[in-house]
Structures are given as structure tokens and as C-alpha cells.
Image (cartoon, rainbow, N blue to C red; front, side):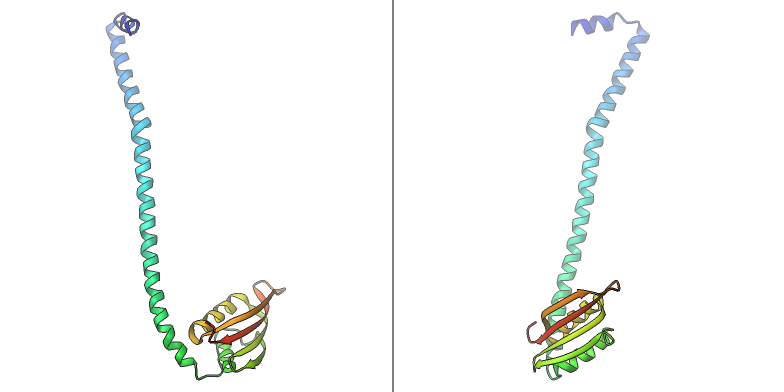
Length: 166
């Protein structure tokens, strides 16, 4: 420390001012880039993560409430579809969901079960159809064999649908 003090005292007054100014600038730069900026960046990233998680939580709570409403409404829909035959439900809902042309065969196995054969069916429409069958009528697929068709987005499928298994 003595050697540094002797060096400093040996400087001309203008040089001493320059050394003090440089020391102040270096101290400010170290403080800003070494402490302030990393802390500020970390706090801002934490704030953004917290906001994103809060938004996701609000969305999930909204979905939960919607699911509860749909579940309550689902019971009423199933009661309505109980009087219709499974064949008529499958036929009408396949047409409503744009699969009327794809249905090649509906074979009843008994009152509460049927095998449906689809050719060149749009895969997404088939999934929406199966979802609506289960949601609205309590009809679910017990067994499925699905193969990709030559045309993109289409499939050939053999489905065994059963009532009361949802």
C-alpha cells in the first residue's frame, strides 16, 4: 500500500485528477456491469416468468370451470340420446361431422355395439366425431384399427363402438 501511495504522491496535480477520475469511472463501471445490471436482468426475468405462470394459472382455472359446466351438461345430453338406436346415432352423427362419404359399412353386433368401417376418412374429422359420440351419446370406441391412407390426412378405419362405455 505504501508503494501505491508513494507513486500517487509522485504524480503531478493534473495526473492525480486523471487517476481519481479514472478510478471513479472504473468503480461505477464495475458496480453497474458487475452488480446492478445482472441483478436488474434477473429481477425482470423473474417478473416475466411470474406473469406467464399467473396467466397460465388463470387459463387453467377457466378451463376447469368450463369442464365442470360441460360435465354437468353432458349428463343431460346422454339421457336425450338413450332412446335412439346406436345405428341411427352413428349414421346421423357421421354425416353431421362430414364423414358420410367415408362410412362404408355399419354392422350391428347387438343393441349396444356396432362395427363401423371407414374408407378415405379425414383423420381429424374422425377424431372430432368420436369425441362427439362419447360426449353427447355415451358411445365410445372399444376397439380401433386405423391405417394411414395414400392421401395425406386420410385413414382407413375399423371401429367397434359401444354404448354405455364412456
